[in-house]
Length: 427
Image (cartoon, rainbow, N blue to C red; front, side):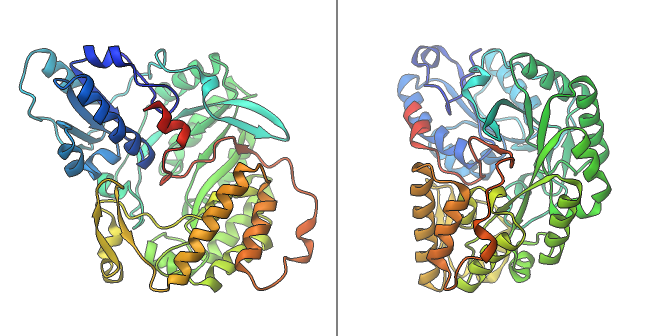
């Protein structure tokens, strides 16, 4: 068996030629776009290989993947089905899929075998105050209890979540620390879907590795509900919490079915300041309901809450992504503006009723992209976006010295990211 990460290394032609089964893990949009590109090459190198796609984005794009030659598509808790497929094919069984498209079976996991992956030095790093730490990744749970309309997890897990056993999570962390990691990113869609399970893991981590830090992702709704756990996160080494705020407009939040309000966001931001924990909000600034005033309001809120340094600049430029199966399509007003599903792009395309908003979104995206390539700071980029969108000067206190201690990853991630040119070069 050969494990290859196409985000950081090339496709091994000889291994592909010798393979009976080639399986692609599709946890997100980015990986799916890379896989589609690689599949065409693999079909040329080995037309007889059985192609499989598994992970969150696989069942979302089932029809398209089969159209381009994928024989088996697996989603949800896929490990048992993937194992069964490999065993079946090795025994000469039919290539026709017998495994469920989506399984929510409760599995007993094994510690991931990372021996065949590229060295941890090839991946993202944590940056704080000019220093860097090697960062590792693990998951304590999968799926989500919530049904946010825009979330790609919902069509697959439909409100279910599954935990990864504590000993497996800790063993996975331990092997990555042994490889050099000093910071852990927990990739759970929401770390507080199971707060008791989550807290037990980080307390155990802190007891064994008190110098190792970590970050998590948690909904605003859960941060309010479990506010008493914020000091525990801080005390066990949590450096920052990513939270999908998405909007500061209550009307948009209701459309997205986010489960929180603008006031809730303000409350959580204040709670984080009280415990000296960094909140890293993410946003979808451009939706079918965005107005120029609404976008400017988001910028004013970020400045007022002193969150400019906490937000990756790309978060000021994102446009609502509507994948296959999205609950956004439940809304009449969304169905009225989307075009047919664009299989190659993996999304429904839509246009704002005000073309000026689409123009603004495109201008902001170009500005952010060029400014990041030029190495400008988050505060500098925010200032340029403000000047592009606003008809008023920056707040008087905006030019205070930047807070260099805000932790951030060297590769800010967002779920609808297109592959970078560097990643595309590998396939």
